[in-house]
Length: 332
Length: 259
Image (tube, rainbow over all chains, first blue to last red; front, side, top):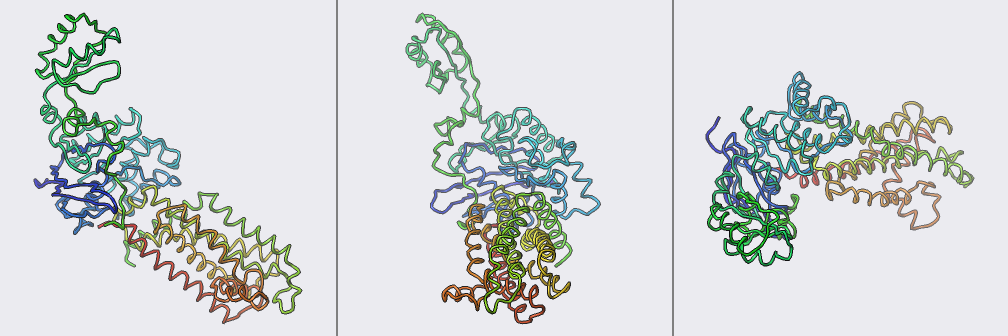
C-alpha cells in the first residue's frame, strides 16, 4: 500500500453563485486505510467537499488529490479508484436490487462472467440476498442505504466516500452499517471518508476526525486527542426543589464556566477537573440545596465543537450562514 | 461506437425500457389518450369529409396520423420525467461516478422512449387498420409509418430530455406539455392546410413542422406513396430530433459536470 496520502487537499475552496464560500480553505490529509470522520452540522460544507473530492464539482480554487490523482486534471483516474454513497441513496425505485447490481457492474466494465457473481456477493455481504429480486421502491431506508453501499463497492474501490450514510436510519440499521464500514477498513484496507453530523458515529468509527463549521476546519485529530484538548469534564445537577435552581447555579458558578443543560438543570465545566466533584457536593450541601440528580460528563466531541465554535453541534446548522448547497453546475 | 460504449448504451437502454414499462401511469395514458382523441374526432368531425377537396372519405383515416404525433408528445413527457427523476434523486451522480460516456447516457435514456414509441405505433396502426379503411400504402407503408413515428418520438423525447437536463425539474417537464399540445393543435391536425379558412391559422400551420409530420404519415394512410409529403415529414421530424438531441447533449454536458 502506498504511503502517500489517500486524500489530500490544500486550501480547497468552493464558492456558489450569489453565496458565501461553502468550503473555505480546507486542508486535510487522510492516510491509506484510515477511517476519516468529517463532522459538522447541516450546511457546514461537508457534502460540497465530498462532491469536489469525488470529481462531481470542480473546486473554485485550491487543490485536491485523491488516490494520488488531481481531482480536476485526472477525474477519470480518481473515479476509477473511489466508490461513493452520496447523501441520498440514489436508486431507481422501479428496478430490483439485483438489477441495480447488474447495471453498476456493467457500467464499471466488469467482464460478463464476473458481473452476476460480484453482484450476488455484495448483495449477500450487505444482507440483501432475500430482497434482491424486489423492486427498490419497496425497500426500507436501511435497505436502500445498504444497497447504496454495495453499489459503491462494485469495482473494488480503494477509497470509499460515505456522505451521511446513517441519517434517518433506525438504531439497528445504523449499527449494521457501522459494522460493515469497520469491516471494510480493517479487513479490506479500504480508506473511508465519512461525513456525519452524529457525534457518536464519528466517535465510534473514525480513526481521525476533522470538524468543519461554516466551510472551515475548526479542529482535526483523533477523537481522544480532540477531547483531551478540552480536558475538563462537566457536572450537571438537577435540584430536588425547582425553586432552588437559581441559587444552585450561583453555587456551581464558583467551580467553572456554565455550559448548556436541560431547562430544569444547571451545568458547569469544572475548571479544576473531576477532583472538584466532592467540593461541588459539599458546597451544595452547605447551601442546603438538596439534589435530585448529579452527573459527571467526560468531554465529548460536542464539547470540542462548542469550544471551537461557541455553539453546540446539534442544531448548529439551523440558520447557518453557509448553505451546503447541492452542486450548481453553472456556478463553477 | 466502441465495445465499451455499446455495452453502456445497451445497459442503460435496458434500464430505460424496463423502468418505462414498469410504470403503467406512463404507458397507459400514452396509449389511451391518443385513441380517445381519435374516437372523439372521428365521431364528431365526420361531416368535415363533405368539404370540397377533403382528401378522405372517412375522417378516422384522416385523423389517425394525429395519434402518432400525440404519442410523440407523451414521449417527451416520459423521457423528460425519467431524466428529471434521475437528476432529482441523485441517480445521475451515481452514473457520473462510473466510466459512463455522456453520449451513451443520452442514447440509453432515449431507448426507453423508442420502446414506448414502438408500442404506440403498432397499437395505433392496428386500431387504424381495424376501424378505418387500412393503410393505403400497404405493409411497407405501415413500416414506414412506424419509422416516422419513432423519429417523431425521438425528437419530442429529446426535447423532454433537454428541458429536464437544463432545469433538473420534473415540474418544468410537465410545464412544456401544454405548449407542445398547442403546437399540435396549431397544425393541420384537424383539416388539410388548404381548407383552413382563417389566414393566420393557415399561416401558422404552414410554418409548423408538426403539420408536415402529420402529412407524411397521413399520405401513407390515405393516398399511398407521396415522395414529397414523406420527404417533408422525415425532414421535419429528423430536423426536430437533430436540434433537440444537440441541445440535450449540450445540456447534459452542463448537468453532468464531473471533472
